[in-house]
Image 1 (cartoon, one colour):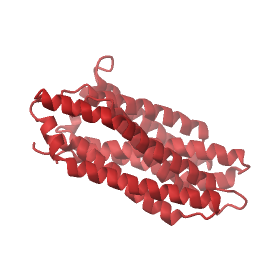
Image 2 (cartoon, helix red, strand yellow):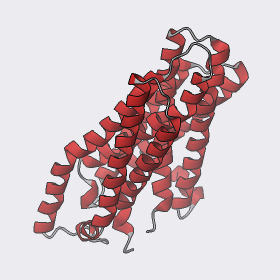
Image 3 (cartoon, one colour):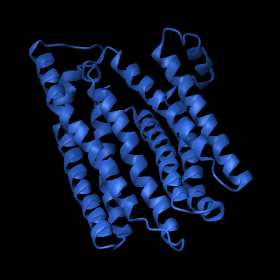
Image 4 (spheres, helix red, strand yellow):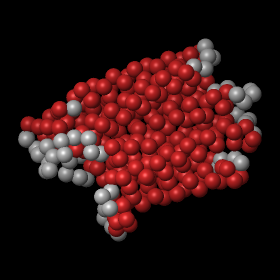
Length: 291
C-alpha cells in the first residue's frame, strides 16, 4: 500500500484531537470533584503534551505524502472553494493551538481546560473538513457518509482509550479521587464509536454493491474491485474491534461494580481497539494497493 503517510496522519491527528477532548472532560470532572491545581497539573500534563506530540508527528507524516513538500503553501490559496485548503488550514490551526496549550501547561504549571476545549472544537471542525475532502473525490468507496463516521469515530475511540490510560492511573494515585467513572466513559465512548460504524455499515455495503452492479470505475483505480478484494482486512478490523469492545466493557464493569481498577485489561482492550482502527484505515486506503 502506498498511503502509509496518510494513514498515520489521519489516525494520529484524530488521536490528538480526541485526547484534547477527553482531557478537557476528565479535567472538568476532577476539578468539580475537588482536585486542586497541583494534583490536576500532575494528572493532566502528560495527555496534553502527548496530544501536542501526536499532532506534530501527524504533521510530519503528512509532509511525507507530498511529492514536493516545499509546494505545500500553494494548497492554501483556495480556502473559499477547496476542502483540501480548508483541511490544511484547520490542521495547522489545531496543531499550533495544541502546542501553545502544551507550552502553557508547562509554563503555568496547570493545563487550561478552556484552551483544551477550544482545541477539541477546532479539531472536530478539522475532522469534518477531512471527511469532506475524501467524500468529494472521484473514489467511489470514499463518497459515502461512512467516511465521516470512520474519522469521527477514530477521534472518539482513540481519545477515550488514550485518555483513560494517561489520566486514570495518575488520578488513582491522588488521595480521595475515585476514577471508576473514567472506565465507564472510556467504555461508553469506545462502544458508541463502534456502534455508529455498525449502524452506517449496511447502508455503506449497499452503496458499494450498487456501484459494483453498475460497474462503476474511478480512474486510475478500480475502487470497488479493490474494496471487494480486501474483505479479510475488514473482517480483521471488526474482529479486533469487537474483542476490544468486550474487554473495555469488562474493565468498566469491574471498575464500576466491584471497584477494581483493571488498567492492564484496559490497556489490552486499547491494543485491540486501536489495532482494529488501523486495519479499518488500511481497508479505507486499499484503493491504492494496486497502484
